[in-house]
Image 1: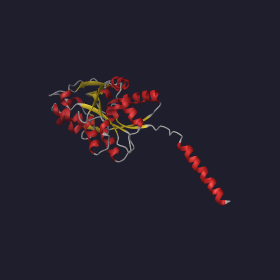
Image 2 (image 1 turned 30 degrees about the vertical axis):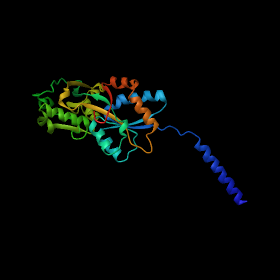
Image 3 (image 1 turned 120 degrees about the vertical axis):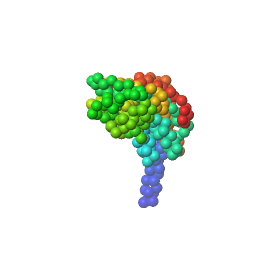
Image 4 (image 1 turned 180 degrees about the horizontal axis):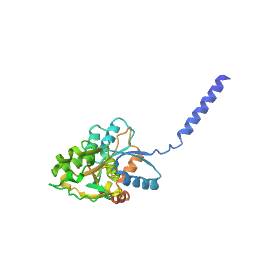
Length: 266
C-alpha cells in the first residue's frame, strides 16, 4: 500500500512538473546600464518600446566608468550604453560584451554652463580668463580622470591653454548629471557638461560651446553584455529598437546626434 501511494505521488509530481514546463515563462525586463547623460532620452525610448512591445527595461544610470567596473564585477546587466569609446573598449578588452552587437549610436557636444540667473560671460578659446569668471567658486565637472564628460572637459581646457589656471579649482562629481546639479543648485558658478544635459535643466544656461577640435569626438557606443548560452531575446529586441528611426526622435529631441554606425572603434 505504501509503495502504491508513493508511486501515485511520484506520478502526480511528474505530471505537475510537465504541466508547469509548458507554461511560458514571464518575459523578464531588460537590464540596461547607461551613462547618466542618457536619462531623459533613454527613459522616453524605453517607454515607447514598452508601449510597442509590452516589454520593459530597467535602466541603471551612472558614470560609464562605474558601470563598466560593475559589469566586470559581475553585475547582472543585459546592455551597456557608454558615453565614450574608452569604457566600451575597456569592457570589450575584458570579454564583457558581445562584439557583434556593438554600435556607435549617438554623438554629443560639450558646453560651459552657468545658472540661468547668472550674468557671467566667458568664451572657451585660447586666452580666455576662466579662472576670473569663477570668482571665488569652483568649476563643476565629472571626475577628470575617469568620467567621460570630465575627461573630455579636461582635454578641452588643456587644448585652449587654461587648464593650469583652473585645475586646483575643480569640483569633481561622480557623473555628469551630478556636475550639472552643482550648477543648477547654485553650488558652483560654472560647469562643463554635455549639451544634452544643459538642455534638460531649465535652471542652467549655456555660456559657450567648446569647438569640436578641442577634444576627441563624443561618441556613445551600445552593446549587449556577454551572456551564456546566448543573448536574451529581449535584449536583442531593445537594441534593435534603439537603432531604429522610431527611437531616433527621442535622442534628437534631447540634443543628441544620431550616428548609428557599426564598428568597434569608428
